[in-house]
Each structure stands twice: as C-alpha cells, then as structure tokens.
Length: 110
Length: 113
Image 1 (tube, chains in turn red, orange):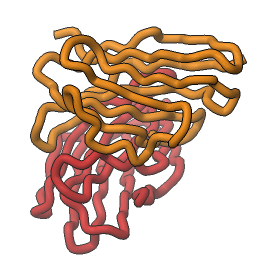
Image 2 (cartoon, chains in turn yellow, red; image 1 turned 30 degrees about the horizontal axis):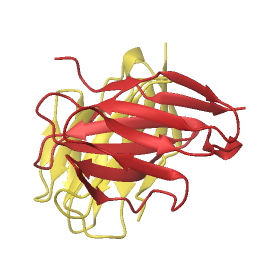
Image 3 (spheres, one colour; image 1 turned 180 degrees about the vertical axis):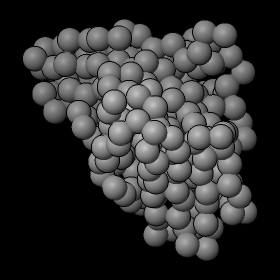
C-alpha cells in the first residue's frame, strides 16, 4: 500500500527548516528517502531500518518511528540546491520492492 | 563506476509498435527494478528481477508488457503494441542483495504518437 507523504508542497527561503512526513498503514521493515530534480533520476539520500534510529548528515536527517509506522525527513538551514521532489519509499519486509509515496515538492528561494 | 545505464534516453513510437527499454545495473548489483513515472506523479513499481528470474511482477500490466534479465546482457522492458497511455518516463534501479539504497538510471522517456 502506498505511503502517504505530507505536505504535498512547501516553499522555503534559504536558511529555513522543513519537515517532510511519510506514514504507512502497514508495518514497515525500512524507509528510504530520495530526492529527484526536474527531468533527472531520483537520488538516494538515506535508508532507515526498523529500530527507530535517526540517521543523516548535519543538515539532512531522518527518523523512523516503527510503532507509528512513520518517518520524517528534516532539512535544516535549507540551500537552493535542496529544491526538488522528495519521495519516501517503504519496504514491508526485507528484499521486497519499494513502494513510493506521491512525493513532496520542495522549492527553496533566495 | 558507470552507475545504472539506461538506453535509449528518449524513444518515440507510433501506436501499435513495440518499445524496448534497456537497463544495465551497477557493477555488483544483482537486483533490478523497473518503475514508471507520469508527469508530476510518483514512481509506480512495475517489476523486480534478479538474474534469469522474475521475483515480483505484481505491478506489470497483464498484457503487452514483459521484462527479462538474462544471464548475459542488460535487463529489457518490452512493451508490445504501444498505446498513447504508455507514454511516461520509465526508470530502472539496481541494488545489492541486502536491503540497501537503490541507484536509479537516468530513465527512458517514451512518447507514443
């Protein structure tokens, strides 16, 4: 079943923060996050395995709440290069194909 | 490391023709996935393959669509007797055996005229 992402779209000024949410009605084994720029391929950002860990770099991180079947992607001090559509992909068991949400379009303006 | 190679990048077919989309996974990746994307929409799963095996084709239309990943050579997604509704971007992704991030190819943009 397709995960639900929110918000659908967000506009930020450079330096502002954003949170993108991904929730599923099914128990999850892992959550992946990808970013896709217009006309390009999706690019892998990170994977979170069940266990509730938080991962990421300094300015882009994510959490996974296994009990709530939710993941959140945190973008801090956004840069123009962060613009794009962010997709979460969920895996119900190991080695099953990812099911992607509809995406969140993020626009960062100067 | 060349990444996931897809070709052609753009493909134009007339209604009723066949479309063949090719995908060479990253070196060391044994899992291949095909996804379809319509403008302003998400990635819709089509099929998951390993060498010489179709693991999950639950997202493939029952007719006209087929996929293979032979022992030698690239994975092929084949669409027979294309219709206008088949126009979309088709992305291939590959991954190593364990749950791991996917690497996507640049996609094939299919236009049916």
